[in-house]
Image 1 (cartoon, rainbow, N blue to C red):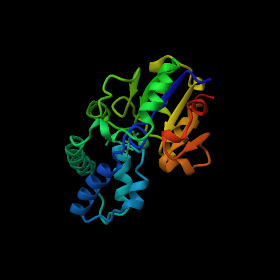
Image 2: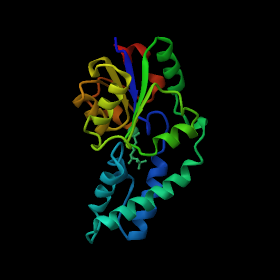
Image 3: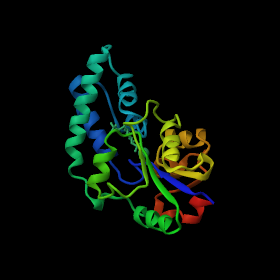
Image 4: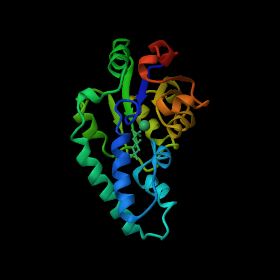
Length: 213
Ligand code: B16
Ligand code: MG
């Protein structure tokens, strides 16, 4: 039985992908770069600068590092403005039952997110001090599918990676969990991914025992 569960944030605890999409779209439109929801799907779980590089695959000119920084900052400013709309009502189906059920069983709980905005998002949804550990984009250098963020979360919890399960909505996140030697539980988009050990449309569809087995 697993001793800890590490939750991805965006797409697992709360859905901010619509906000990410609108902010990237505003930036891309201003630069005249084609961007759509199919390309946006490739940004799931991927860091801000790696996301920008994916968007720039469709650009017709090359950008300097300074210009790229400015574009990422512009996107993040737009995104941050939309985060003030987030409330505890935006927590996804099944999440609170899963968190409280796991906690009652004595399982340690952590966040493992690529997002540098993790602290503000957790505050907005009322979970600012809920988790035993938070590993996020501010503490890591390698984006998912590298396992760095999940290995850091396990370390902060004081558990062996083999004793942890990861809940993810991104293919890159499932790859990261497996690369870190952890059990991979998939929801949302990643639930179609054959590399996941357990899958469901939302956390409401996955029994606690299936996460912990
Ligand atoms: P930020 P997760 C990820 O969060 C998002 O899925 C991804 O779309 C975003 O680019 C990334 O965070 C970085 O976010 O710009 O806020 O640092 O799914 O790993 O919780
Ligand atoms: Mg995610």
